[in-house]
Amino acid sequence: MRNTLFNAGLTLAFCLGACSNDMQNMPPPKQRTAENSQKLLASQKSEDTTQSPSSASAIGTTDATPDSPAATPAASPDSPPVDSTDNSTTVNSPSAPIVDGKGELIAILEDCGFPGGVLPDPSVTVFQASLKSQQVTTKGSKPISPAMIGLPVIPFAPPLPPANYTAIVRASVEVNASMATTKQSVRIGLEGFSVSVLGISVPPDLGKADALAQVQANNSDTSATGPSNDERANLIGHDGPWKGIYCTLNGSKSLSYTKNGKSKTISFDPPIPGGIWAKASPARFKAEVGSGRTFSNVKATVTSSNDSSMPAGTVVQGTVTVSPISGSLPELGVNADIAYIIRSDFGANTVNLGLSPSQAFYVSSSTKDMSAIVIETGVTEMPRLVLSK
Image (cartoon, rainbow, N blue to C red; front, side, top):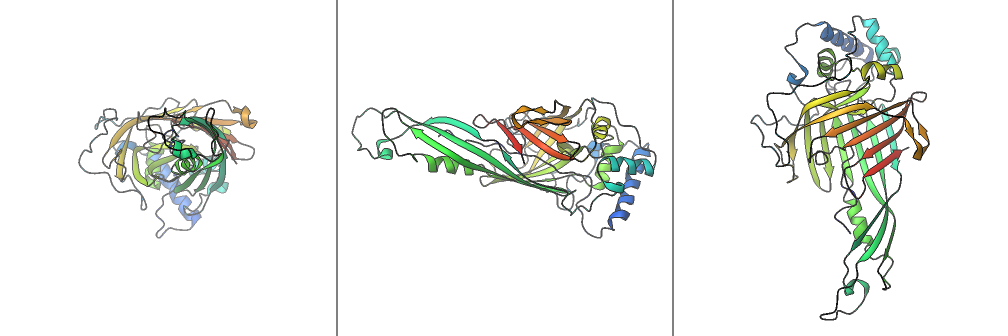
């Protein structure tokens, strides 16, 4: 078989990032919500802009990844140049109006899908789903030897024709998200396999074990962490792509990714949108995202790694954009009234960072649930995954 059937990391990233994951000495939910409201209001009313989103300290929260190295880390050979002094961001939609009262903030949080404007406890699961992709058919060829099909080895005999195979592959994804952290497991299965060699009878399972091993080598586990309370309030209240975004986009500031025995943790400055919050109303999406948002000059720093292709200290600079798309997905019979696509571009290292080139989210506002997710993986053998419950 070819190198791998599937080697992209899927970061569905339902991480909400609205609350801190510091679980020590936390007040009851209603008291904590009031404190959060005060922080948001204080942040938006402040005229002190010396603390910009890009200058916020502490890339990690209590359970976050290790701090980035103090010294300027070496860039990956495939990484575009990094401007260490420019971490600006771009907003290509009107900023949301400033909130000037607690009642208005509570109304916004209710429109976000939080009854009474009360945010859930950070440890409580707010999204849990088992998703499966449609079947993906992969075809290819592999050289074979006489011994592989039970034939004697004859010196100077011409080589045998290659074995042509067809593999049917399906991905399943388990997602468990709280307001602080999202955990995701991706498992790839082989649901069908056939092989043939021109003019030669071969065992029907020839190469199947090899195909199964290659498929299962692409199982992955991901954990994403969002900004803390203070960081989120600062991002919402100051100029930048996060200004006025209370809930529709889920922020990821750190990502831990493991696949085939290789693990790495990446921090993002500023945080990047990893997904959308399905419980927000269409009006909330229009107010917060509008015609789109652009997160430019994002610095991705590998803070720990046992992957030689992307060692600790690697820095990659890239752009993430969020755009509205048509809610029609005929292959699943989906016609969603909320649909957005998140595109990530970190050059040749996008997939190595555990990101996908694009993820399209289809949401039904009537059920306040995800109808489907379509992922462009960036991998030739399995370029597109259509996921649904």
